[in-house]
Image (cartoon, rainbow, N blue to C red; front, side, top):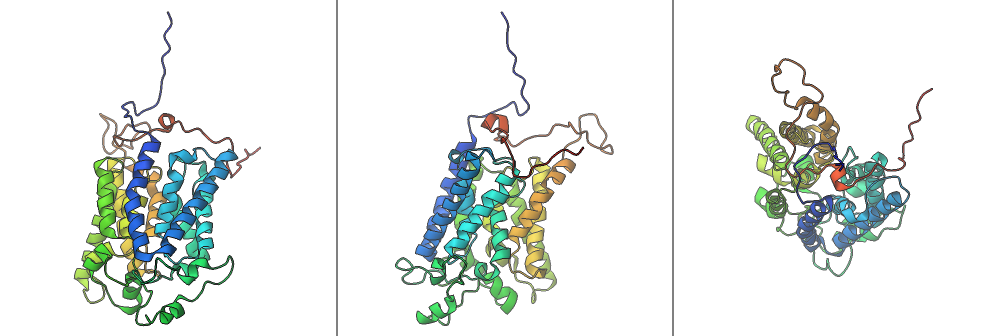
Length: 381
């Protein structure tokens, strides 16, 4: 009687969790954040979430159907990309520009590398970086939150025709007799006007008529749920928020007149959303425990430095993309040395290291290498 022995690569300790189950839980945790975002901005936010997510799903369907990338729509990864991308865009962002962002996020951020698990950069941030460069004025135009009639009408710029200039939101606000309210975000008001908002108001985002994104407090609660269920590793957001807070505190202690307090830096902009939902992407972040601390620390420090010394008020997107690019190098230098080897020697390539307990290999997830990829690399003669 013959016995077949199946030899597979590590990890050998598995759980019953699948990629689909993890992604469904992440989507479920994002639903309260999306609901509050719609409560803040009304129909324009709801339309942006729907259009951007639909564009991501349609693009994913196209590349999977043509065999360019692996995965299926049932793995929910494209839904996560669409929701995170829409939450990072202004609520009055023209819908056709949001659709372009969704297409680019999947095409350049995911399908270009072969699909789920093969991407190097977070797809949602790739889409946002593209529209940041392509439509710099529209992406910097925010509208105040909790406006009257937000559930009865759209922000005029939302329904702009493709390739046409969006309507002027300043004139629209004046028509509503809200000329004393500006659409500048708290980060932009601090950077260009020297006015810092109250951190407690930013934490809940419940103060009326502030041009803010999703509530940081709600994001923290939803992120804590994922961490408790072990759907994300707590080390990465802890390292990002800790390093950002320490860097901001050091600069504030050095010159409190020029720099705001660290709580303002932590609760303003997209730092909370990026730290909990974007930087923790399994495919683009390190898997070694020490690597996670280094990766998160790099992102937190870069975020504060870009906000303080860069030309843009926000720096989370670029900091995470730089961290994604450095992730393979961080993994290489944070592998523990093999047993019995001196710390002065270079770690062996095949050294083992502890993986996240819920890590799922591509073989376990059933992912297959795509039949063809977008960049065709022909061997040299």
